[in-house]
Image 1 (cartoon, rainbow, N blue to C red):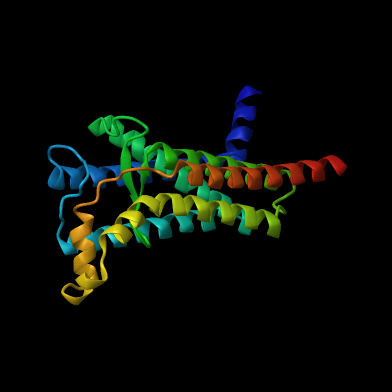
Image 2 (cartoon, rainbow, N blue to C red):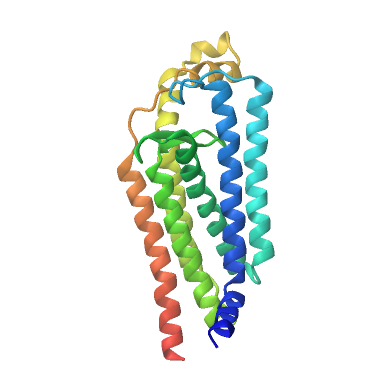
Length: 249
C-alpha cells in the first residue's frame, strides 16, 4: 500500500522532480564556468573594479548567457501543457538555477562572503549589478508564482490563465526591479561620459574604459522593494482569484 502510494506521488510530481534536477544541474554548470573564469581572471578573488578580459571571452560570455535563457525557455516549453504552465516552468527553472548557482559558488569558493556582497547579475541588454540577496529574493518570488500557477493548473485540468490585470502587475513589478538592477551602473555611466569624449573615442572604447573602473556604490532598495511589492500583489491576485473560483465551483 505504501509502495503504491509512493509510486502515485512520484508519478504525480515527476515533472517537478525532473525540472528541478535539470535546473540544479544547470546551476552547477553555470557555477563551474564562473569558477574557471575567476581562476583565470581573478586568482586573488573576485572584486570590483573588474579585470579587463579579451573581446572573444566577453563575446563568449554574452552568447553563453543568451544560450542559457534559450535552454530555460526550452525546458518550460517541454514541461508545460499550456502557456501558463510553460511560463511557470520557465520561471521556476530560472529561479532554482539562480539559487543553486550561488550555493555552488559558496561551496567551492566561499563566495559570496555575505548575502549583501555585490555581484554582476547579468550582461544583457546592459550590465545588471546588485547585492546577492536581491536576485535570491526575486528567485523565491518566481518559485512561489510558478508553484501557485501549477497548483491551480492541476486542480483545473490545466485550464488556468493569467488575466490581463495580473500580467500588468507582474510585468510592471519586473520592470521596476530591472531598473533597480541597472540603476547604479547606469548612474555611473551617465556621470562619467561627457560629450567631448565622443570626439576622440568610440562609444565601445569609452564603455570598455569605464567598465574596468566601475565600483558599486549604492543599491536603490526603495525601487527594488516597490517592484517586489507589485510582483507579490500580482502573485496574490492570481492565488486569490483561483481560490475563489474553486470555492464557488
